[in-house]
Image 1 (cartoon, one colour):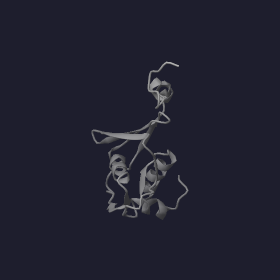
Image 2 (spheres, helix red, strand yellow):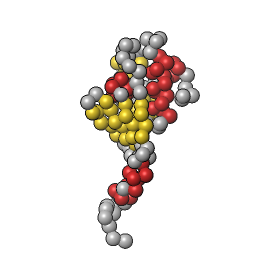
Image 3 (cartoon, rainbow, N blue to C red):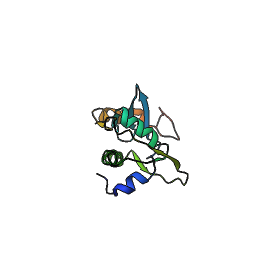
Image 4 (spheres, one colour):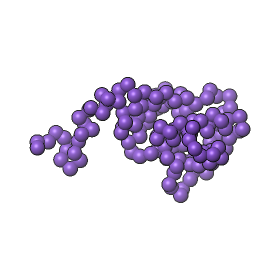
Length: 135
């Protein structure tokens, strides 16, 4: 779990780490890809809703029974280096209202394709020269 206190995790707003973290919704679930490591993450519908809200800068207005699962979820996103505390002074004041009857947010981590993904020659593109180029 991340080292921040409970109140810090839920009161803070977050943003995606950088442009190398991309996500796409598929039938209520979310797939998040870290282009730097080749790891990808599958978020169940509860986690997908939270992900969408978090990356919009929302903070949490949580019921006590939801706090532990939300802290764990945010801590996991921070540990996987998918999000960072927001540096923007513009915070979305709409707080996330978690549904205590919804299934807990879950993240599945996959790195089985990371070696293949990182071997993809498109990752070796020189921005100035493009690809392919002659030496």
